[in-house]
Amino acid sequence: MTFVLQLPPFLAMVNSLINILDLRSHSELSPMLGTQVYIFLTLIS
Image 1 (cartoon, rainbow, N blue to C red):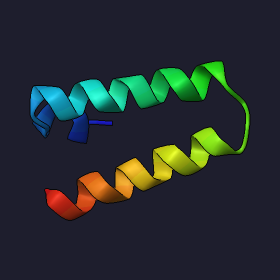
Image 2: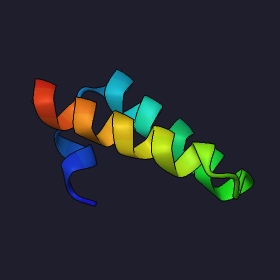
Image 3: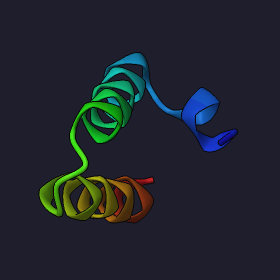
Image 4: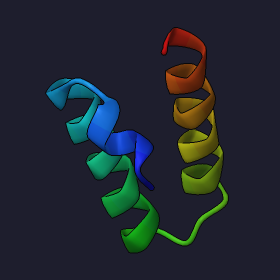
């Protein structure tokens, strides 16, 4: 995902934390949260 390199450090760190949560938890909440963050980052960029 090359878009992470174009984000400010804080947003990149948040995205990394979301990825860690997705790896740790296989519940239905994590993919939804990751999708919402991705949409949010797409809207503000």
